[in-house]
Image 1 (cartoon, rainbow, N blue to C red):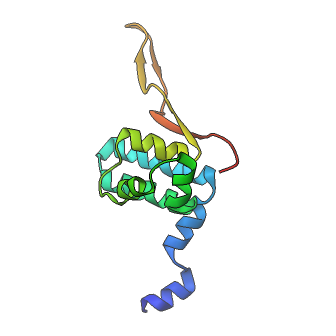
Image 2: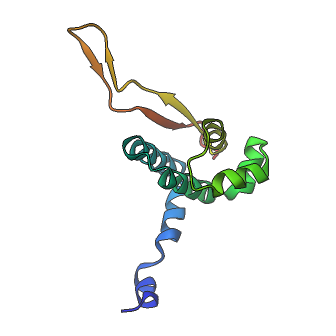
Image 3: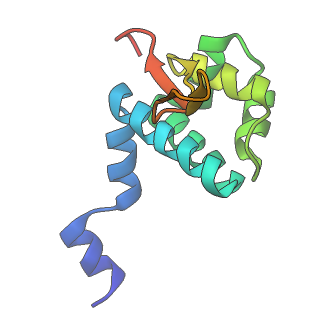
Length: 131
């Protein structure tokens, strides 16, 4: 079997991924998992690739620049890097994609006898349905 035969029968994964990530709720879950994995392994290249895929699926860098009033050149440079964006750039990108972040405690010691737990460290929430 060759690649052309396989693509004819199954389609292109990248095309599937971009169609999947065009849905804001799907993009939210994808980015949450990417951030969770980054917390575990620190692989910034995979996190950066995930962010780039969502930006592409949500209309591309030009549309993101228009939403954030950010510099097109700076956004291109940020998204082309092999490393994760700086915190400022990450928040700018997430906001431009229509998300906001919230921080949740993984484990909080209330007192010596009682611990409070939640599974989320950082989660993304769509700001509205217009994205």
